[in-house]
Amino acid sequence: MEDWRRILADSVVKPKDLAERLGVDPKEIEDIVGDYPMRITPTVLATIKEKGDAIWKQVVPDRAELADADAEDDPLEEDLMSPVPHLVHRYPDRVLLMVTNQCPIYCRFCTRKRLVGKPGFLKKGELDRAIAYLREHQEVRDVILSGGDPLLLPDHLLERILKSLRTIPHLEVIRIGTRVPGSLPERITPKLCEIIKKYHPFYMNLHFNHPDELTPEVKRACGMLADAGVPLGAQTVLLKGVNDDPEIMKRLMHQLLLARVKPYYLYQADLTKGTNHFRTSVETGLRIIKALQGHTSGMAVPHFVIDAPGGGGKIPLLPGDYLVNLDEDSAVLRNYENNTYHYPQPGSTHGRELPMVGAHPSWGTTANGCDGGSDHL
Ligand SMILES: *Cc1c(COP(=O)(O)O)cnc(C)c1O
Ligand code: SF4
Image (tube, rainbow, N blue to C red; front, top):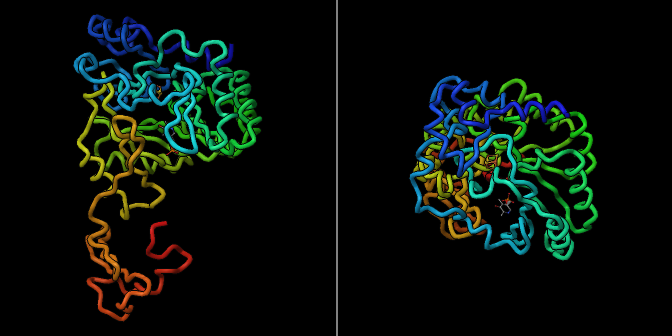
């Protein structure tokens, strides 16, 4: 058996193991793990410092999971947008393909709580059907392998999938969404990196929610992937009591950049049944973005999105304060320090010599410069 398999098998899965390791009364959680399985890898277990901390909350079952019985199992309506089993085609040019329902850890807030960790998932022939769908649909130029966690597949199966995807000429980009580097770093082996390298352009989005998750071993695993030429992005879920705080979030974003991972999305929590105790107000996320934008490197600012209930897809949100007014003459803008600036529209009657409210002295010289100037592209 490979090392990482042995380490995964050492995870806390049964309520009585949790009682031994963390002193939780097994009776408290027995009925929860019946519906929603638990798994806590050694790496994650070692990161828990005390009862109820940010890591604990993400992985230790909580009775609140049984409280929102009226909520929906699939609020994003993924199952309705699935032309063939395990494939979600919601956007014009890219699809999500769930290749397993196993994960290194079972996050208590998971959007796919309805299906992760349960027995029986990919049935014989289903993967072939999904690949046949991709082959027929020439508009699809990007496939995201998800689940569950694709990196829990054995190397030979993962390679088989990557190889068949690369026989589809119109498929440009392959991505994987994974929580493995942060929870089972031993899985990132030189052999896995050798396999992945052969299928570029290949991207990975890693799931991280708290700065304490970026241990030296985790950073080393991220570094191995980066050295294999994989551009790494991060997806973070905004979670009450875990990371709903601008200071924690800023530390997380800085730790990610140190691990060579570029923050990509910050998700507002979904309405999934069994996860509603993690939800925060929409203002919380906007406040976090405001605390990052301008105050620290733009590299450290993720897109804050809500995946719209009812299958609307990801919708980006920005604090409303940046664009004060926009008309055919000019844009009135407010920066992170709350100063106001005018940007004249091309061909407007207002010249650059007009006085500006609180303008920066260098305004007008860099607006179109190749350093990006004042535009946010
Ligand atoms: C998030 C998601 C994607 C990918 O979206 P990007 O914005 O391109 O990262 C594709 N399909 C589904 C169903 C998704 O939820
Ligand atoms: S690793 Fe991802 S898919 Fe698996 S339980 Fe966590 S959030 Fe859900």
